[in-house]
Length: 187
Image (tube, rainbow, N blue to C red; front, side, top):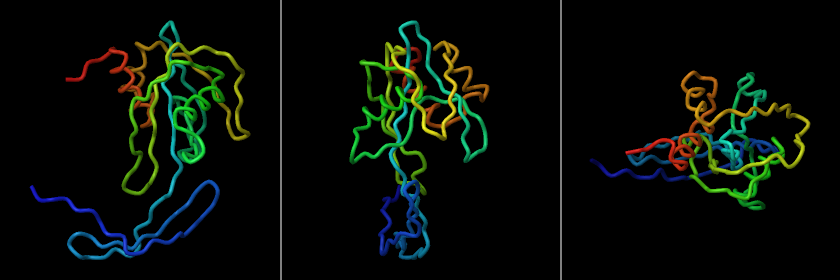
């Protein structure tokens, strides 16, 4: 097997900058010496997602409209955060509280993954929250219209297999949470 080498960034410049989105244009040299002068990269905020489980093994999901795909989806609570100002664990708990009104004192980092490393810079921080309880009202942004759905833990994998849960981050965290909770075994 040959050695994999990184690309060399020759130049990098912002193309578009907005508080919600940044696009960068890189000029890069590939390991074979060829140059790509228009490799576009989305500079995206970090994301925290939480798999919240109640004492009676209900998983708290949110159903909401996502304009990028123009669909209503069933997914786990989460959202973007500024990693320079807020630790990922705090962001996960904040998103859980804001979107659902649920809180937890038992939170475990499951993993950090990349969403689309070909074109995006952000990471997704995945957390398991156990013994969650509803302690607050939802506190939604003006653009959010979220319905909370409790789904028995045992039914969650089936909803992935049928496509009802189809958001990549929610699928990834479910797999890791089930392993952590010893509901599935990976060999």
